[in-house]
Amino acid sequence: MHIHKYEKWWLTFGAAMLIAFLVIVGVSAFHGGTHPNNSKWTINYEKVDEIAPFDNPGIHKVEGKDWDYEVVLVASAFSYNPMEIEVPVGSKVRFIATTKDVVHGFEVAGTNINFMLEPGYVSEKITTVDKAGEYVIVCNEYCGTGHAMMYSTLKVVDADDNSNSH
Ligand code: CUA
Image (cartoon, rainbow, N blue to C red; front, side):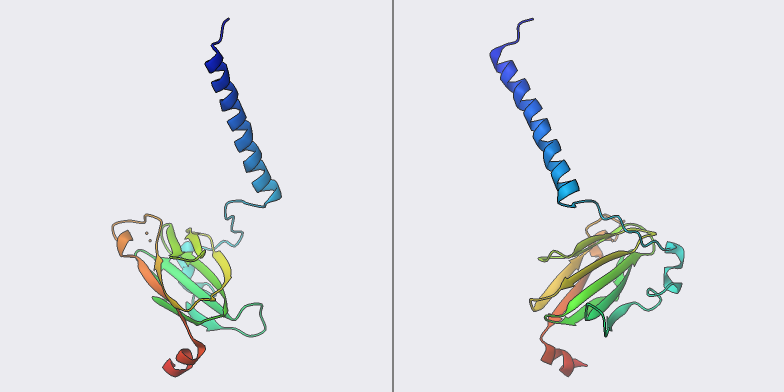
């Protein structure tokens, strides 16, 4: 069987790409540790309001932990509780979040804070907020008719402003 020269090049190119991509996926998964967020913390999504810490959503200052604040967040169609998050600049924040109904997103625009909220699972993210400002939080998973209305604000404030306003 005769295979045209260009056809051979193209076949070789295709096979090489396949191998290259498999190697990239393999290296990032097994060496780099890249993987889908597989939360091991599960929750009965119908009883979120009764289960700690979600029976007390909000921004909690904590002592004696590796982080300064815990933001306990409950999402439901089509809002977040708390509706607004305010933390002092430079603080280390642990987000603990879940949803009461369908899949929602939690993306703090312009930062690397971005995670999915899945019914039955608790999502966590520890991060340091090192730049003051107001950040828009958006739901980036389509969740229904109110999806586009589902947003919130993260306010990273100077420590002085924070003490004045409370
Ligand atoms: Cu919640 Cu989209």
